Each structure stands twice: as C-alpha cells, then as structure tokens.
Image (cartoon, rainbow, N blue to C red; front, side, top):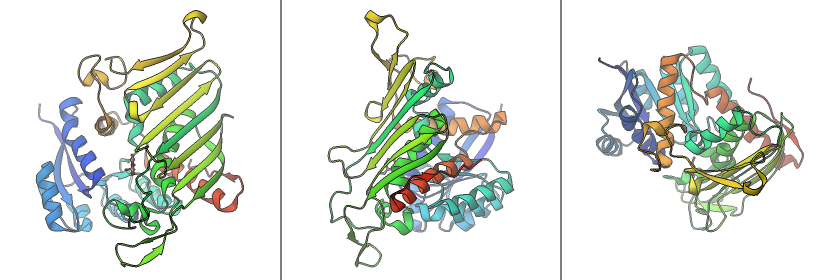
Amino acid sequence: MSKKTLNLGMVGYGFMGRAHSNAFRKVGNFFPAEHQVVLKAACARDAGKAQAFADTWGYESIETDWRKLVERPDIDVIDICSPNDTHRDIAIAAAAAGKMVLCEKPLGRNPAESEEMVAAIEKAGVANMVWYNYRRVPAVTLAKQLVDEGRFGKIFHYRAKFLQDWTISADLPQGGAGLWRLDVNVAGSGVTGDLLAHCIDTAMWLNGPMVEVSAVTETFIKERSHSLTGKVEKVGIDDASLFLARFANGSLATFEATRYARGHKALYTLELNGEKASVAWDLHDLHRLQYFDHSDQGIVRGWRSIHVTDGDQPYMKNWWVPGLQIGYEHSFVHQVADFIAGLESGVPAAPTFRDGLATDYVCDAVLKSAASRQWETVKQAS
Ligand code: SOE
C-alpha cells in the first residue's frame, strides 16, 4: 500500500537540526505509520552550509530564505530548529501558509512572542508541537504511566535539576554557532529558557500546573566579547536559575539549572515523592527508572532500579529485544512517531504550542520573581 507523504522543510542545521533530521529519517523504520516523512528541503542562510547539511542528511533540495520555504507548495511541515529569535516569525508565516509547525523549545523568547505564535497556530488550525523531547525517554514516559495509574497517592514533592559546566570560561564570546545561547537578544533568557524549560515541561506533565514561584538567578560573568560587534558587551542572560514552586495539587518543588556546575555536562535529574511511592530519574543513566513502593513487603522494601527495555514498557517494543537499551536520540524519534500518530488518530500529540506557552509563563514568572525578590503568580495558558 502506498503511503501518504509528509513533506518536511527544516530550518536550521545545528545540534537540533541534526537530532531532528535523524529522527525524521529513522521514524518510518521503527514506527511504521500511514504517513512517510520525506526530507524535502533544508534551509539555512549560507547556501554552502545548507547544501552540506542537505547532502549529509538526504534532503532533496535547499533554500536560503525561510520565507521561500514556507511558501513552497510541496512542503507540508515546517520544523524550526534555528535560534530562538527566529521562532516567532517563521512559525507565524508557516501557519499563515497552512503548514503544520514543529518548533524547538522554548517556544518564544518571552510570553508575548509565544502568545502570538499560539494565536497564529490556532487561527490557522494547523497541527503543531514543541520539542520537549525528554518526555519521550522511555523511563520518563514510564514515570508518567505510573503517575496516571495513581500509584503515588497524594504528591508532596517534586525536585528537578539541570546542571552543565560549559560556560565557565570567561573567554567564551556571546553570539555565533551554539554560543547564541549566551546572547539575551537571541536567546531571550539563559538557563531559565534553555534548561529549566525542560524541567518545567516534564514537571507539569507529571504533576500538573504550577501556581506560584520564588526564584533567584545570577549572571556570574557580567561581560563577554560579542561575536557580531567584536566588542566586550554586558551579558544579559541568567547563568544560574533556582526556584521554589507550589503546584496546583498542593505539592512543593525545587528547581535548579546552571552552566557553572563543574563536572556536570547535562545532568538532568527529577524526583517525585508521593504518599505511597516515589520515583526518580537521571539523564546520565537515562534507561533506568528508580521506583520505591511503600506497599512492598517490609523485609524487601527498597528502591527498585528498573531497566526500561522491555516490550511492555513505553516505546520499547518498536526497538530491539528486552535488555538492550536505547539513548538520547531516540526520544526525538518517539516525538515524531507520536506527532504522526496524532495526525492519524485526530488526537494531537503534546506538547502543543499552547502547552509550550504554559512553560513559558512559568519561565517568565521565575525571571520576574528573581528581579522582584517576591513570590510571583504563574499565568495559566488555558
Ligand atoms: C544546551 O547546552 C542544550 O543543548 C539545550 O539547548 C538542550 O535543549 C538540552 O537538551 C541540552 O543542552
């Protein structure tokens, strides 16, 4: 039976351009569906880089202007993997052109941009999704399954950290490939939007909405040279961001993200403690879920380290055989698979743009609280 095609136009060619392209290429092999993704066009301002990227990943053509890409009649889906300052304009134009839109996190640089993006997508009525990939690490998805089964009883605590150490050197410039994350005009914020946003997305997925936050942020290196101007300029991003939160279900939380935790490269950890059970996960050991069930018989009660590789655990029946684990890149394959399944079932895959807006509202409240030194109420997205 011939498949329906889903013609992809990719904007950007960096780390996420690669992670997503890999997922689009693999998804049909491991998660067969009615739709087959076709890598139609890769778009970057530099034609040489766009062509090299297209050749590496098997895109049929290139564009050097995203405006042309979104107007192409042979494109169904636009995937935005370019820096944060491009997200709004591309998403709005793509939605107006009737394309489905996938966008790297965070949605906008601030809630105002994200609100415009949500309005455009919802007005156009096109399928949409934000790439919060960690939900689709099978061990994290299993945690969600356990929550949905009501195994924890009343939830008391949520705890998350995302620790890195790659910006400790004062010699790193702001701006340029990868380093645009240090330029507030491009990124919107520092670790709040880049790292905490992941923690917040997973937290609200597992534990429901957050209602108020109290935060502290710090910019440890106040000035850096700028790759565009060549001058030393003030740094506007938060290098570290920590906050306390209260969820709508009454539970309390702590969150921490930094790029100054020497020795930690991408240590995303989360833990949830309920009246009946607890669960914990660690990105450096991503195929394991730690689970404590208080109803276990006393003499054998303890933390179980669940190796999430069995066919009856989330996503795993589509991969290898029990005991053989998968990794980081597979979370993106799962996200594409779920997006396609959503198109075919009519139940849209999450996180949608509106879900992404909810995360951006929390990030905004965090930054406001750090500035005001007060608790801030979180605006709700729906
Ligand atoms: C930053 O170093 C970064 O690449 C983030 O931008 C990603 O979203 C995160 O998953 C890993 O770290």
